[in-house]
Length: 117
Image (cartoon, rainbow, N blue to C red; front, side, top):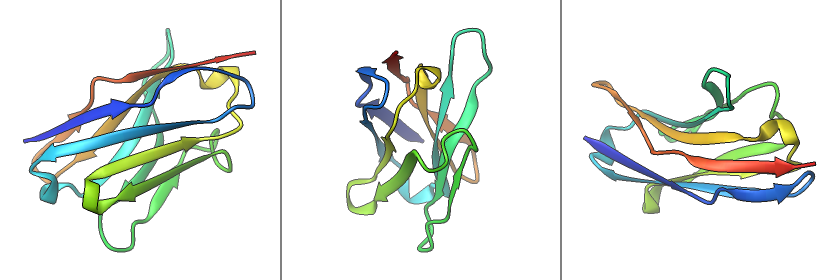
């Protein structure tokens, strides 16, 4: 089992920045990939960014956030971060941390990001 806990959401104005954190606990050694998804009201949950937990740490981003968001990890702290820059009102959503192992997929409880225009 893996437990994921997000933090760092909030209310910001367009153009500002936020950093989201996702702390993993439990069988963290079994994680292959971690990522961030978001879900806006009335829309489906979508992938924002992901990072492989191997040494290469390959990353993947949604087209809508490329060049603005950066995913990173601190293996010593079992924590993954999402740096959100140049925020837009359309980035408003609940952001969920996601972790994938060979045996299952895990989710955090979500953190709200609201961007005002």
